[in-house]
Amino acid sequence: MPQQFSQELRRVRPNSREDAVVALAREHFERTLVTVGGRPVGSVAALVHPRLGESANYGEVFLRDNVPVMLYLLLQGRFPIVRHFLEVCLELQSNTYQTRGVFPTSFVEEGGILVADYGQRSIGRITSVDASLWWPVLCWLYVKRSRDHSFGTSQAVQRGIQLLLDLVLHPSFEGTPVLFVPDCAFMIDRPMDVWGAPLEIEVLLFGCLRSCCHLMELAQRENESRLLEQRLSLTRQWQHDLRSYLLKHYWVTSKTVQVLRRRPTEQYGDHQHQNEFNVQPQVIPPWLQDWLENRGGYLIGNMRTGRPDFRFFSLGNSLACLFGLLTAPQQRALFRLVLQNREHLMAQMPMRICHPPLDQEEWRSRTGSDPKNWPGSYHNGGHWPSLLWFLGAAILLHQQRHPNADVLLMGQVHSMLEECYWSQLNQLPRQQWAEYFDGPTGAWVGQQSRTYQTWTVVGFLLLHHLLRLNPGDASLLDLERGVA
Image (tube, rainbow, N blue to C red; front, side, top):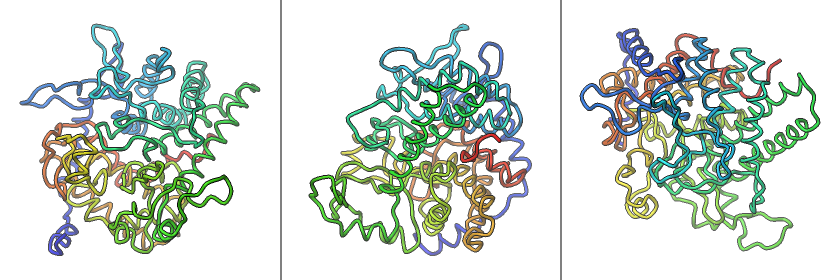
């Protein structure tokens, strides 16, 4: 990137209309709320465009899209809406043989009847896995914030947890603790060669298991059960094994890559195995050395036999900080990596969902020539303003936990976050709160981007709340501590 642009990128000026922009965003948010059974239940995916009208299924309530919505409502103390949302999702949890335990990707009320989508109506007909993993996380955060312990220990919630655990902890022919999913099964909902054990799903699984443990501990405290204690012990062990696995096989630094390059291959047997997945040194991409520099680190996108995916996925890495999967030094290594690569990851519209984009032949073969995932667009290196608050919350939560750690680095990271916030505040109202942005720097509104996108609006409001109103509220997302 030219030096001139690099300097201009850092000269983001505050906007004197901050209060007006925030008020406008709040107005948009209130318009997104819809009712089920006559009571508010959550937000539609996007508002109807003033000129273009309704589009596809954007008028439905998506569990994934409502994650930031529910968190924002919790910060506002609007607990009844969050509880109603959780109850409706629980009511729609699948009981059919093939999908027993799965939560719906989305739902809508038609003629007084709830209609749910479990993947049978989606593009590609793929069941969304992340929706199911998010539900226990949202449930635990609601119980912790509202102190509604009776809901967390209720028979309906505890049964829903057990159904989900039966699904994700089901024995398989794989000996690893990760959850295997097909392509398109989470936020990356179009072909991007992310099948297997993609980072975002594995980190969400970790957060899901940790939240389930907290909810089961609450129930066990009120009514001791031998069966529940056994399930709790199994879930704790799975959570521990999953974290160890991810830190061993997904975490990379300049030092670990050096070790990876020099490991033996074609090893057979079960003793002194240094290269369990038979990864050849030739698969390590040449851009990785400059990307990591000396002190950066991150969790790679996937680990498959002989085929590690070294792409950087923003959401999975941000959640790994929030959920406490990464250690404090590893989190700072990640922040350092983002800081030193901000021209790629932040650019003009923070932040890029995936780096680097698949280009040319890789784009054709891995995405099926998907025109929406053209290099630098949508999930193939597109820029999503809704992702910035996840990283922002991770930075602020880290500063709360470790106020005296590497003060210089954290000061620089916080300054970067402030500049990114002003960049969004200046641009998003003009760009009609677009879903994603195209191009190498995110300068253009996405070619198929939906405007007045709910999680763009709410993501901005969450970041404003954490930066301006109450930075201490970043602790809402702290999954490490249970209820005292």
